[in-house]
Length: 265
Image (cartoon, rainbow, N blue to C red; front, side):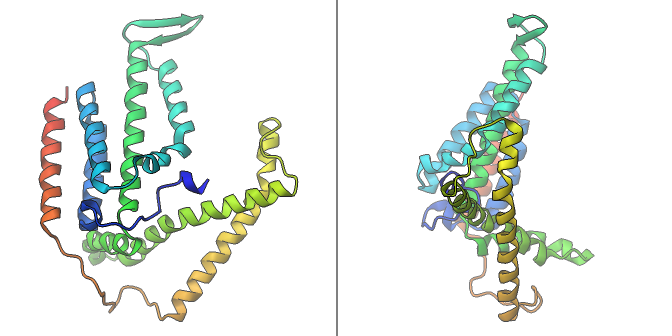
């Protein structure tokens, strides 16, 4: 299970994306998510897919490893595809069975929505795979700093988001261990109807919650023992600085926005 989760994990490297400023990557993620939903035809989606593949190559990470981040959401993507195929109407009727029909607009929307979900997940995985938790926390804090003037706890929000991302692979590993332990004791998680399978998850959920609360308490005690008092008066060994890589990301973002808007119908 752990091998199928890429979001939250960090792979050290010296690629272009690894050495770029986390603020640039975070802003680009927001822009890319907007462009994904602005694209509404075959050309724009093809451009976005090609750009995503190019970005994966730029990260110097294994393409197969990054694609594993889609495995946990295959069911969601498949459910969305089926829902659009049978619920969205319009255009040529491809197939009809009683009151159910598969029409052109349904197939079109199913393909586009699945592509959008896949691209968003892949780019989110690239962000965490190429950005260390410390850099991600500092980048979020620097971007949200203006909201601190109106009383928003910027440092605490950034820290919580970073810890949440960091603990995704840890909890997945813990879940995998619990499943193997319960299977060795004779638990069966694959047979029976839906209700029975849901009941079989109880021996997994309870130890997982206990482990999560224990880890949270240990983390709180460790932070308190090290004198953590929030972001007030805190200094940093490595300060974030914009470089030519971030300028290149800004230029690419502007060009991609122009191209998607131009080819949009």
